[in-house]
Amino acid sequence: MIKKNDLILAGTVLIVALAAVLLITFTKKEGAEVVVTVDGEVYKTMPLDKDATLTLGDKQGNYNVVEVKGGEVTMTEANCRDQICVNHKAIHYNHESIVCLPHKVTVEIRGGEEGDIDIMAN
Amino acid sequence: MKTRNVAMYGMLIALAFILSYIESIIPIPVPIPGIKIGLANLVVVTALFLMGPKQAFVMSMIRIVLVGFTFGNLSTMIFSFGGGLLSWLIMTIAKRWNKFSVTGVSILGAISHNAGQILIAMWVVNSGVLIYYLPFLIISGLVTGAVIGIAGGLIINNLKKIELFRP
Image (cartoon, rainbow over all chains, first blue to last red; front, side):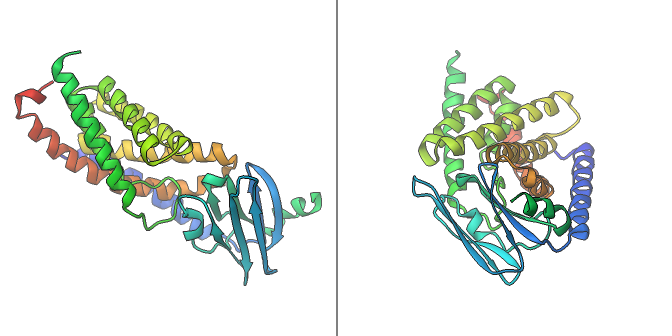
């Protein structure tokens, strides 16, 4: 029932995916700032080394609470239906993200160097 | 439409619907958007091998609309359509290619389902950062796809012994 080709497929896919995971794991650096976007637009950029709480809300009563604490970011509260963002582990490495799909909110860690431009623009 | 097909559609859609419900009450321990067990894909794979690509497509789409209106909403439905369409397309091509068994076709279906959902998600939140989840989604699709594929293979082989299910 399992053909040789199935195993070749599974093996290839596994190797490629694991290589990508390893690449992401070994090239990750501590991030420098937190970029919060709503519907693709940058809403706020915050430094990662300063504790802060940001509450996002809209007219329909949807809300998300983003907390920066001890150099890590978590989504502490949200009234979305899947709660994936709230259950997500704390993030602090460059390119890590917490996404709340129902509310179109993303919280993304960015590195220091590339982030400087954003700070200046703001 | 032949009576046999009407009965098959009804039965398989009902089954897919129940499997989607069961899936919706099983909590997924990994908080990554787009991860699915894909229980309903068991039925789509079965339909693809026992009935054909067209029937599998109709079934998959009817299931998404029914499940969307019952357990979800319009926005969860967009994700299901993204995953469902891509996975149907890839599975149909993979089956026609004739190189894989049900297991291989199901693995490709599960991976493309997850990938389709993440692509829709990237479009919805308008941000590319979700691409970093893709390797994890591929691994999860590999595991769930293999399990569903092996189970599907058993089901298909047994159903083929019954005259009604012979294409």
